[in-house]
Image (tube, rainbow, N blue to C red; front, top):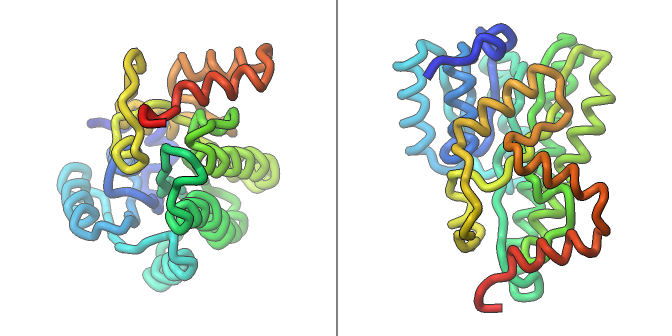
Amino acid sequence: MQGSKVLRQHVQGKWALVTGASAGIGLALAEQLAAAGAHLVLTARRADRLDTLAAKLRSEYGIEARTIAADLADPAVPQQLLSATEESGLAIDILVNNAGFGYNGEFAKGDATWQRQMVDLNCAAVVHLTRLFLPKMIERRRGYVMIVASTAAYQPVAYLATYAATKAFDRFLAEALAHEVAGYGIKVSALCPGPTESEFNEVAGLREMSGRGKQSAEDVARIGLEGMVGGKPWVIPYTAGKLMVFMQRFVPRQLVSGAAAKMFRPKST
């Protein structure tokens, strides 16, 4: 893999913090950044996967890569990540908020603790981590922040109710911050993927849907990062998703949410 010239021009030699880096889109984002010459701090819960990935990226791309195994659903972890990077003298110029998970099923039947953890990880941790790292970027008058949202952020989604709501939060946060910090030379972007080759469906309990092709995590990561450095406040990395979001402007919301409910209704419901 070779990083694109556009991405390399913006990230080479800079330090990036990637959350949820052990699998799926997070892993692909880490690989794309490393291929473009960025140094990495990788964090996720699974230390063995992180260490294996870091060793691979060091060997293939000659970059520095450090790992911090942690669960961002723990409210103490964002400060721990900031402290660890500052104590090591690392200036994080690229923050990638990717860690998150979903749940497919009836809201009333879902585990309450798990759904609360989803909000903590998908929303609270994103706010906390971004709030901690953004002021230093403002001081240096440079930096990039990516928040991984979803095309589920563009409409209510029954049977993915909490997940879609968290991703709407993430998208709105990114778009608002993009305006706030543009004057400091910082670019903030929401990456809004659709069906992607990753562990998400397995963790969320989503069935495979016929007729819905999945995009590779590598393509999602590449398009998302190029959009981020290009200053796009949101990036939908596939054509069908762009068309869907565009068409929603002309269709009654009730019809859109009803179609989503039929699409994501579990077979057992």
